[in-house]
Length: 90
Image (cartoon, rainbow, N blue to C red; front, side):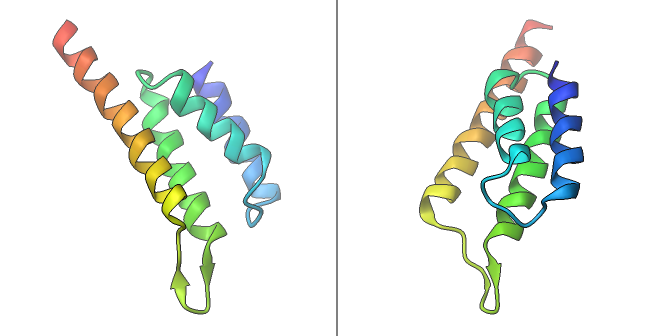
């Protein structure tokens, strides 16, 4: 399921890459939050981060709001924690 959500986001993003509130944004968030232990979650997070950077780039460079930065940190922590749990189970 995580892999499917990832590819849905990539496909939708190619249609509407510059819009902050796009379906791809929601797909990528869901991928990370619902499946943080899946290998696709890291790719979803990378795509989500790229989408946020592109959404907030302007003539003064990238200006991510603090709330977006905090969300990226939280999502990265979800993926990292899931990877640690997975490694300790092995």
